[in-house]
Length: 129
Image (cartoon, rainbow, N blue to C red; front, side):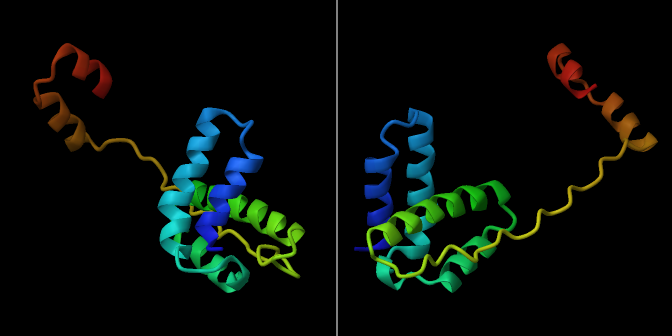
């Protein structure tokens, strides 16, 4: 069985009682992350290195990486319980460090003047200022 197929089966069996939004999140994760990365990989051939590479590719999308890794960990644990793996390939996977947020700064005097020069509607003006 291929990784995305097992993922879908897992979500259908073990996440059926979750909210509709949670199931939609799992489906999106499988469709947009797991399937493109692991579509041709058989579950029994899944390696820690492949999973770590996939997580590393999502370093700039921290929350997406967290969701994908969480789902893969659950799936691999279940696959280990189903005797597909002797050892869980997700055990040693680490998320990339959080990127530092850029520090916010105040507008310069010239930027403030340029904003004042633009004619906004009342609603736009309230939003901008």
